[in-house]
Length: 188
Image 1 (cartoon, one colour):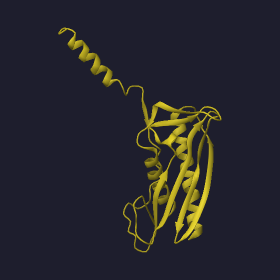
Image 2 (cartoon, rainbow, N blue to C red):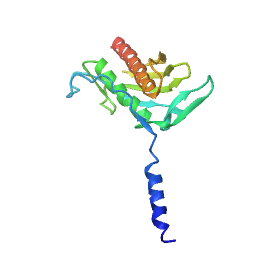
Image 3 (cartoon, rainbow, N blue to C red):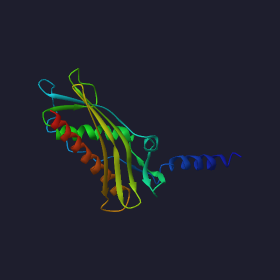
Image 4 (cartoon, helix red, strand yellow):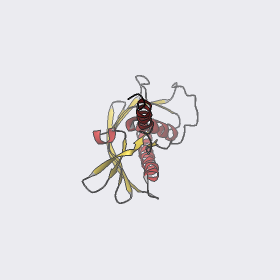
């Protein structure tokens, strides 16, 4: 038994160390950065991105791919590097900061005079026809006025594969951020 113990330990250690082999982790592409890294709220419009919610099927680690009109596959080897809802919120803050010069956009509360944005993402996945889907709705509380808008963006991937799918999902999310920014500017 003693002579097999080192072999057994080596086998167990190699099994543990290879458990992440073949897995690929994805992060949404960073949007454009705001021009100024130091901002103060004095005399500026304030926007708090309170939350970005996603449904359970998107909340896991796996990147989601729709295989038919009614079936979805949650990948086991192609995973989000950090929780998707956090990535969506962080990139939305970065994109809105870039699109709204003169505003302070934050993922933390900014004070009593802030506008509050909540986004409910219902679709954020690739599809069998080579397109990506980004859908949901957002609600903006702007000085007591509520504005609610649905969104449904479909973009064609330029290449096959998960890398291209994640990049295209990032482009669609950035496009929605531009639409939100345009609506916020219109309300001002």
